[in-house]
Amino acid sequence: FRLGLVALVTAWLAASPLLPQTASAQEATARFRVMVPEIQGLNGADRRFGERLADQLRDLINEMITHQPIEERELKRSLNQYDVDMEDLDCIAAKQLAGLINAQVVFCGNYTPEGTGFRVETKFIDQSGEEFPVEPISVPERGQREAAEHIFDALQLQSDQARFAQFCGDYASSSQWADAENMCTQAIELNPAAVSSRYTLGVVYKETDRPEEALAEFQQVLEYDQLHEEAMQWAGYLSATLGMDDQARDYYQQYLQLNPTNAGVRMRVAYDLATAGDALGAMQFIEEGLAVDSENVDLLKQHGGFAFTAGAELTQGQEEMPAEAVELFRKALTSYDQAYAVEGAEMDVGLLRNMVVAHILSLIH
Image (tube, rainbow, N blue to C red; front, side, top):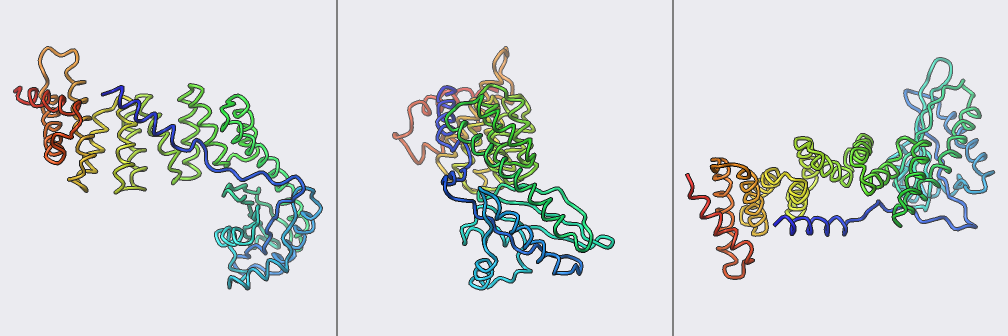
C-alpha cells in the first residue's frame, strides 16, 4: 500500500507544473512596451501633477534601449475604446488594460498631498503579474521631474530583476539547480516581493534536499500571495515531512478551501499527508469530502485505505491491539463495504484483501 501511495503521489507531483509560466523572451530587436498612465491623485491632490509626472517618465523611458513607452495618444485611444477614464485607472484596471494593448510592463500608483508637496507611491507590474514596488518618495508641489527620475531608476532595477528572474526560471526548468539558485537569489535581492522567483527558489531548495529552507521560502511566498496554490501545497507537504502535522493540516485546509468540492484535489492532498507519514490526517481529510459526497467510490476506497494504514500503524510494537486501532479498522471496513456494493467483483484484489483483514481485526474487542 505504501509503495503504491508513494508511486501515485510522485506521479502526480511530476505531472504538475514545476514552475509558473514565465514571460517569453523579448525579441532582440524589440523593446518592452511600458504603459505609463497618469497615476491617481488622492485626497484632492492636483491632477496636473500626475499628468506632468507621466509625461516626464515617458520621456525618460523613451531613451532606454530595452524599453519604450506607449504613446499618450495610443493610450487615450485605448481608454476610449474600452470606455475607461484615466482617473479611474488604478493598478487593477491598469493590469487589465495592459493585457488588451500588449503592454509588457505597467506603471501604476497614486500620490497624496503632504505638506506643500506630494507623497508618491508607485510600482511596476510585468506581464506575468510580478510586482516591483518603487520606494515611496516625497517631492515639492512641482517636483514631478524629481519623482520621475526616482521612478525611472527603479524601472532600470526592475529590468535587471526581470532578467535574473527569467534566468532563474529557465535554469530551474532544466534542473540546473546551482545556477537557478544563484539567479533566483539575485532576483530576490533586487525585489524581495518577487513571488515567482521566491517560489522557484523554494522548488530549488526542495530538489536539493533542503526542506527547511524550501518551507521557509514557500511561507514567504504566501506572505505576499495568500492564494498561491502551489506554494500552499508544498508548504503543507514539507511541513508534514518535517513532522509538523498540525501545521501541515492547516496549510492543506487552506488549500482545500480554494477547491472545496473537488474530490481529485482532496485525494491528492490526502496522498501528500499519507506519504509524509500522517495516514490518520489523510483519512480525516477524506472524511470531510465524504460528508459532502458520501457515495463517491474513489473517496470511499481512499478512506478505507488510509483508515486501514492508520490502524496498522497504531498496532506496531503493541502486545494488545489498542481500541483506537480497532475503531479505525471498523471505519476501513465500512468504507470498503460501501465501495464493494458498487464495484462488486471488479474491486481491486488488494483492496478486497484489506477488506477481509479489516473485517477480522474489527471483531477484536
